[in-house]
Image 1: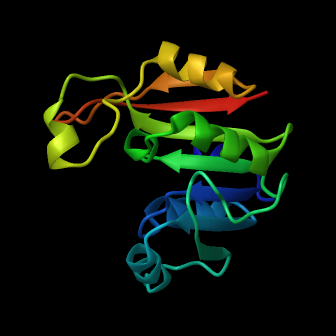
Image 2 (image 1 turned 45 degrees about the vertical axis):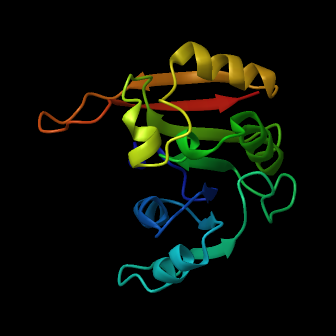
Length: 168
């Protein structure tokens, strides 16, 4: 997937945590802005030994991104949306940042029945079905352009993941 990225793209990694996804994407794009609401996570991200020079980290919330309208090409949620109570608000904010020509990339868990994750890992949502994601996208003026279920690692015990691209 990374090889398909365009070297001129500006990517926003929403809920970047310690910068894992930002660091993976950075060599393939022009710029990555990692946004997280947790100062401690951002501090750790800024001290990564593999920190690329084209990554910046800023403090902010998924519902109020500290970025201008139409300032990015791709807004990315990598294993974040299941922690966000207001998914529609987060998707609308991502759409605002990428504008009508940008894309929103969602990598998250497929819908599952592990209710204990709410208590043990702070999950607000038990993953997302393709239909649920499509309905959310449409509510925000977008459509699911691509949706791919990822095959789980044979040793994995958690839910399977998906990757989806949302756009107008």
